[in-house]
Length: 259
Image (tube, rainbow, N blue to C red; front, top):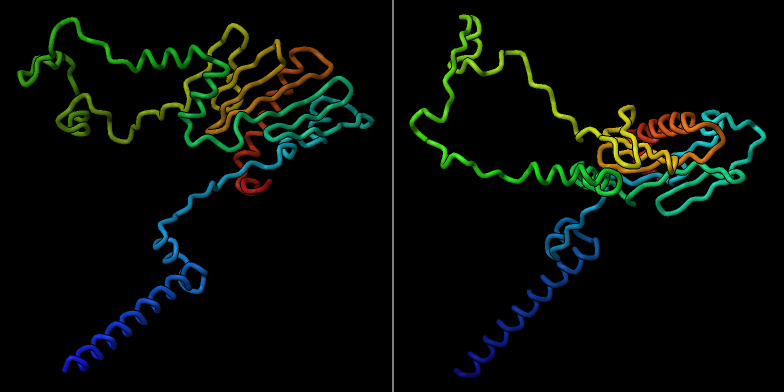
């Protein structure tokens, strides 16, 4: 009798071992790509995130013919390209036109890009924003609640049409009239070394001393440098035109995944 029980237990253990081995082989096959790849990632716990947007090769943002025509360089001028990790320069003699990105990929949000722009080119903007965000204590004690005293008295009269459109609240906006959307970034202000520009991007500052135009555009921060013959006004105008072209290239979905 004991021999029969031992034989039965041995058969059960062998069957369990075979089933476990089969399960293990199934999981290994899934991880190797023979089964559903999503199942393999779920089992191993690895869900990878990828950046959809990649910048082009940096010199793609500086078309040679456009630069020559913009700054009236002439056909006999030979431009040499110098490309770096986040920049490109077109040089001839002691002159150059440069494009510089502030990060190897776009910032995760416009809040981050604006903060970075302000930190580099308009520091007082971040200081003012931090001071504005701090709550200010009241000097009149706690606000009254539940008595109606927290609402100021109003003597405004409304027409029957306004009342019917606004409902019970006469201060509500009229139907069909929407509030204007706030700008993505606060407007730039003049600094000790730079001039606020409103003609390009969401925020821009021109630094005459460096012949540089710094631009915030959505979640991109970049600079254009113009060290070319001509007046300061010509350099500024050329930098603005080139920055507009770059912003358009950053917006073009057909170029978003090249480089």
